[in-house]
Image 1: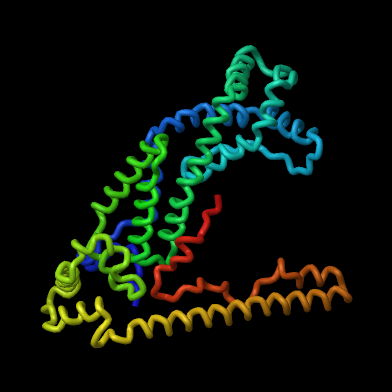
Image 2: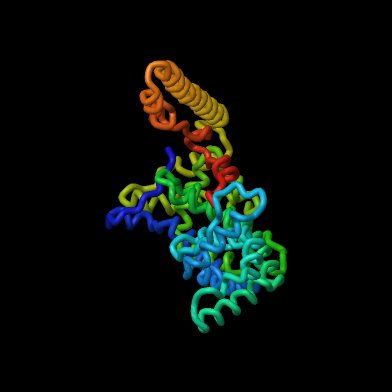
Length: 361
């Protein structure tokens, strides 16, 4: 049975498990990421100034919309400027990406004589300073480089946030997710990314140093679909004796009034080597996985059939009244079937989610 990671204020539980909100830990890593003072980050200050200037005057936003609508082949809707929000760290990436999308429009705005038709001399001076930034090709080159780099970095962080904030996130998933983040940032080789690499790795190491390491490691080892695979490079540390010592410590923590069973060492060894009482573990895992996949296929078919029935009902009702057809359409109906779950088995690491999930950037 998988260990469910839950936060609790119970004094009785706190003596067994020291739990930190893992989603908050990811947010702290992101905060350290943006505070790393990488060279390319210096250009974001100028980008923030341009965004603030554009958003502060509705007249400028109206000019941007008018310029877009006057472009040949414009199909709308016109794009506007986005401002980043401190509590939504992906919004900064979206704001800078939108600024790049408006690059050509902003260059046309910089040459538009209507810019100086309103405002006083102070506002005109501010406009001239912003136009100098907009006309600077180095600014756009650095911003393009920044957006590309930040997208590459924020994507695994966003995936980690989505995994750790899930209601059914497990301890083994947390450790695997943080390990994946560590290896991703450790593999960065670009000189412009060295500051970021150091900051994120230090942040991850600090979060791990404060974690209840024995419990997280044990959760991964007790996942029959994973066990020693994430630690194969540390075989000299995770020897059978070291693993038994880990489980022995946890037994004494969770069952302080009960002595460690005499057969406990043999049970741990048999589990790791899939022998004796665990000899059929591989067969059992395959059976569970196949059953889970079959269940998902049945749910998907049921899910599709429910929409097919809704569409059929909508087509039949359309011949009688058009208004009833609108009410019966699939976009206004809720399917009685639940959303199909992940095809992964209930004990796996949900690797398709970790590898294929994409953040909504």
